[in-house]
Image (cartoon, rainbow, N blue to C red; front, side, top):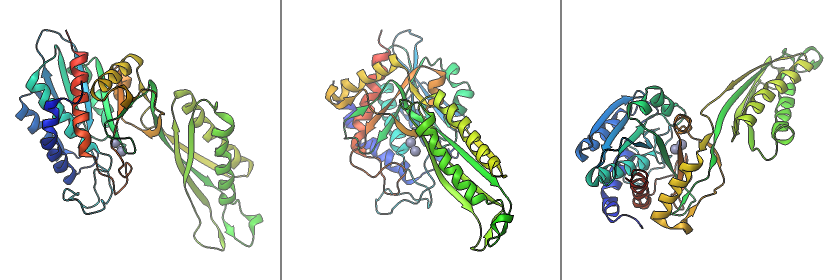
Length: 387
Ligand SMILES: [Zn+2]
Ligand SMILES: [Zn+2]
């Protein structure tokens, strides 16, 4: 089955919604305008139940098919934008300075609305589809908030699926893999407390800059010497702040960065080694290191069976040649990981063509991807809810 004809007919309408959402970006949980737009559209389509305020500002629409099956699957889109100034020029550019849909969540929301419209119109399945619109994907744990609000139980969801656009991947292509597909994007910060002095008298100081530099060097050993080379990990120091002028050795230095990992074992190893290395090097130099490690969302782990289902739906839409079923994982993070911890499911990438990258001020969701995305959602729902 190629693109659904009806979904292709929706393309214009869905892209109008997408551009409207693009012009009105909102951050984290403050997605009231977007959530109201979503709820309004779901009402217009005649979905059976619309529940708002799940996970603070999330929305779920329930579409019941023909037949008596109690099986329910969840399809999830994200609604939030990013704190970024958009490069102006497009007629649908952000109307809110400093906020921008630079991750394509406008497109994700619009495509899932398109699928909801189709599914509510045709109801060619036996069971229930829950269309899920989550807030706060960009670092706010919105997926977890919805899960903790009892969403899975409330709607009897047994399987859960997510989709994200990917710039650089050709239009009309999909990519997926079993197991870890997106990383756990953790943060760490280290404060090195030494002793300040005149820069001309280093013997009276405990220099946090020299000690901090050794710590930065030491952290490189986690990936190079501690982690199993077959288990990827990234340890990046992204900030180092110390001092005020050229003739003072400062009292302290602060270092921070990120750890990206694709399995829990190497994640825990990195967390432990950062503390050991920072505290050990500081201690050996008569300083003190205070280490904070913040676990963000978990690794996004695709369940094997559901990955096969997702791949099959994508192949149905674009053909096997256009679906990579063993794509390299990405070291970026994805909040959908929380939903995959709660229910079996899979997360797939959809080609956005040759556009600027995600989180870039020149980025824009590619409306040409809409028919593929809508068709994928519909196909997946109909396949998973056959008699
Ligand atoms: Zn993003
Ligand atoms: Zn995103």
